[in-house]
Image (cartoon, rainbow, N blue to C red):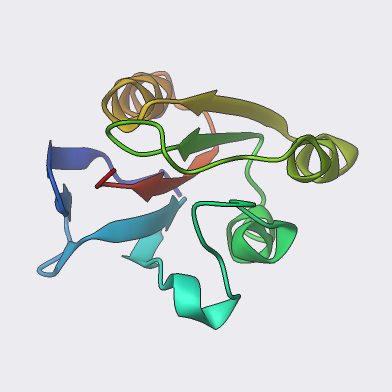
Length: 122
């Protein structure tokens, strides 16, 4: 099963290939995607992405996880969250969201089992 490409990104709007719905923030993994609702885990820009935000994607068997911090990189990614991902044996890459989407799509094109979480505003 391959990861879906991200077809488009603009401020507050992401479109994933094969999905009729567009997202503000999203999670993607081999075979699927869904909106990333920060209220589920109490996430905010500070302290940022929590391990609980990533568990769903990591459970899909990804080898690499790409995190998009927002268009202006306002979303923080604590070192404890990065350590959590690495301790799962998964490579993690963190970028400004437009760069994160480019990297994610490149990995999809290479056939990597990649997942991602992306914030499309600030």
